[in-house]
Image 1 (cartoon, rainbow, N blue to C red):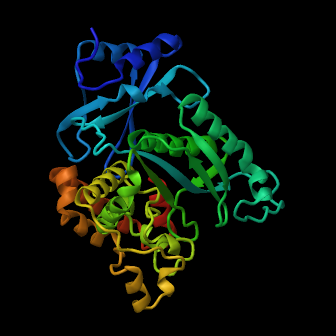
Image 2: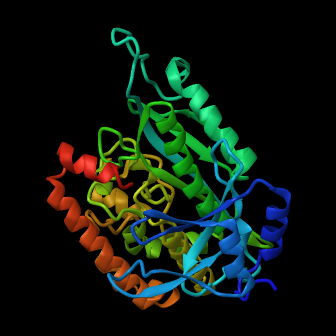
Image 3: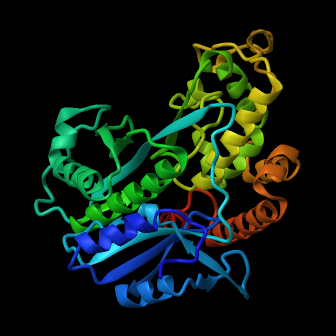
Length: 395
């Protein structure tokens, strides 16, 4: 009979299950307000029976302790589960009603991510063996134990999940590595990022390696976001797009940096991030990237519609080292939030983001993030090992 969902891609799903005869289970995967990845695993038989009669799937409401909501599958996202069997497949889902991203003013977007993480061997057979000196793009460090793991991660992403990987290399901090994902349309890019992050964690766990996505020192792991605009006459609107993003950058921090630890990474004078104050280098692994990308595109397109002038000039030095007069000359007149509460308040006061994404959704988002941070505070003070362990188990 076919599905009764207002979602495309069912033909792709039907063809997929026809060409994967050993398939037995469907993982319905979703991401909540706190970027926690959840899954319901259904037998293929039961999932098809629900789809054939057009029933939406019922799931616990991610924003409330009681109640239910619809878990809607995006059939275009179907791919094999990234393990060594071919019995499991993954379908990404979302809650509520779909709001597809439309091309507007003849413009489209491509997005790529740089996923930074730290990796430490948990079981070293020779405890007297000294670790290789870790350096940015260092050869010896990456050959010591991570090269085969990063190669396996890349193969699984590219060959099974169709997530493009451009390169990987050592980062500048101790035990730091970076996986650079290729560009995709925005929603596909964030889906690919979720898959890449979970695959990195899974492959490392299988090989006795601990992965940390901690944004706070000493790791200082970020999640750089690269956006390109495509379309006729893009050179006439790209500065207005960037001006729109900058106008709402403080509120966007509520999505990009929802944890107190996030702000230690971008504080003034932090050498690794100082030159990226007006670039989208704000997110880290705790970010809600679906909402962040929705907010960036909404802010940028509002800048295009209004024809905003880009008043911020190119800054080639650490902005923290400039005088007030030098910052004013460069158009750097506003400081970003320094802790989550400030960012949440800016978001709630942002009429554009509240209107384009939804007041009810964003109010619930802020409430949940504040409760999450309260739980984090209860685990221990910033910098303490219990707090770090609590957070790292959930990022």
